[in-house]
Length: 423
Image (cartoon, rainbow, N blue to C red; front, side):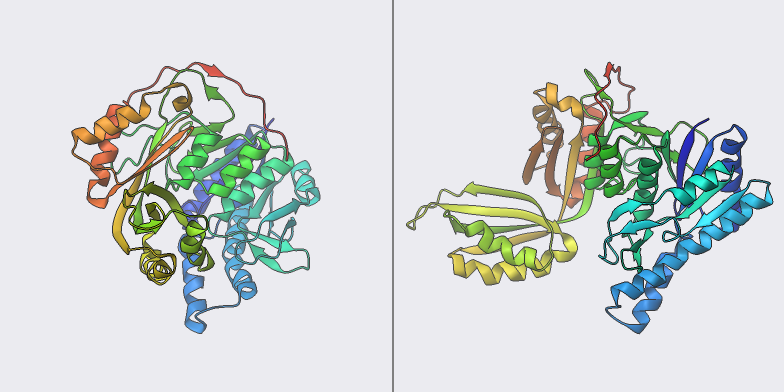
């Protein structure tokens, strides 16, 4: 008998028929003797509908009241799923986040979980029932309803699995696992049987929308076995694990983001404090800076060596960031601010990079063969990211997928790492 935490997203619970199908799937686990905790999101589109209602009343709704409003979506789903389970003879009990309770901090709309009380869930499981928990929500120390941010149901599921020491946390979605890249871009993209937490975290942060970043961080921190599965198709899915691969694959996947923009400040005096003078106003306006590149421009007409300072931001922040730079540039003696609003980021991800020295060279050659110019480069131990023009996105992804033969099953030699300790 295993203890399993399952999470079903909005597309999986988008109708009564889909909820009935999920109930039958859960019954299969109960029939074989497993204990099951189910976490559900609001029905597909419901959170957007509620957000639009609030927007009709106020351009800036009070965060506390928004949490009260948005949490109702999951409350509908837990009641319907519990009814569906009861109808087919499976004992079930629904819980809102504050009935568990899932205690969070007081940062409404983006709260973080501080602790989970297990007594109610343990009692339900010991009684032979399925516990159906509302994802995305909790309760603050002073008794207010809180929400964990978009995609927060993934975090709820992983946190419950960690607290209950579950054998596995299963994330059910509309795809049957994690792929080497987006199958809509590369028809030969392959579902991965396994991927490390480290790789999945990079993939999630670089644009892969299969899992929420915070959920992957939480799972890796507490060593929660995490599996991505399809709600609508049978299959093994993708296991996200602490195991690493000694030899292959070099590259596990290719992630990309389309909505990037690039800004450059030309002729910046190379002296202490310049980077802060330029990026300080950007950060104060809650604009997230991604890749940063600073290089000597070769112009030494002033008392200081001059550099060019380049970075990327989300496309939606491009105009605001450019205006802020144009205000700050004269104060630091910069010559000019330029930008490109339509660029994209393409990233190779794989723990195998640590032991293979020629990954970057192969990447650059594959792109050169397609006459794709690289505008920026950023690297870590397990990732290489480049910025190219948007029009080259799909061509770049296909070229790299072919170069690293990601459509073929790799031969792997596995080694088990020491499980992560609670921190």
